[in-house]
Length: 481
Image (cartoon, rainbow, N blue to C red; front, side, top):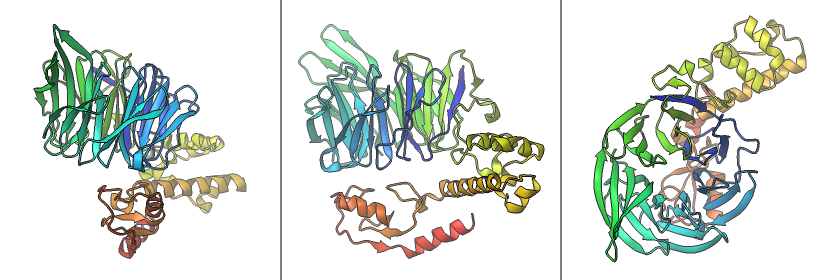
């Protein structure tokens, strides 16, 4: 049985990655932050969120001992953080500052790797925080990477669908063409490997836009070339599979999909053990704890669900959402619910989060739910008996800020700048045909980025054309909120 033990709702944009250390859980998001939680009770640590990136964060991962957290971003930087204090240990810039799509530590923490949208990977020496090698490994964006458990090689996956195996000098060991014919989304080595005489054997999971999860055997006989053999093709999910990960014992493999589900498989037989259906939108990230029977899943619904495998405490995966323990959930603008869907209890929780505890009894006596809160004005606030002018004004300002934040968070995707994922105020069309917030794309270009943030192809010109039609559409949409 798999039970859900926590739903974390702090991120204000899509969750891009989840990672466990022996004692912590880290999550990253398009909102430019990394959040860090205790893996025992899922309370957020005092120094969280981490806010050193200028654009959305695509990946995060811990060193094997858990003392250091690595993150990477569209801003072209990888940041090493102390997981004890949240302080920045080092900030490393990818060559040419190309947007980073993933990062991964070697199990022995000797190296870590970052991969970029320009098809390059950078291998960094962790001990001295310097670049060891950087090389072009694909003509397409490199979007996935995983080190082998022996730390002597790593695999990369690209949007063209190839998997490539490399040594730590970025020499090609093996190429598996069209492993996922519509593009690789994620890959993960199992934590163990087997040596039988002169043959070393590893297991690798990969998933992609073809809606498949594949398990491979990667092997090498002494002195011979590496070979990849397909062991299982798993097809229980009905849409592109965006993330995959092995359990610490290698017995399970878990995947998250655009069909909003998390699938749990027996890694040996390939049989489906369970399907988890708690997310409202695409599941973009999955991770398993190395020390506890826990799964974390992140989604474009901006939440992270934490699941316990076995007979742990919590509600079952099939239980209704009302019984979910929503640890750390912040209602002011960060709930996945629309304001009109808030219950009376949600409203009272929001009051406490906003420091308006003195109003809880008044709201409870008048049965104020989300609909009434959204319609609150000076007159209705006075009718509720809120006599203090200052308190009444503070309440109304918080309500307006909440409504504004929710209206932005529910905006159609085409109204959001692809770089910042924020509602555009002055949209312009760049040479790649995409629309961006003027300030964001101008900053991008000033940073000597000559390629498109969306396609990674060279921008033929830096000339920007105002998108007046889109600007008017955004204005009309906001006026109707």
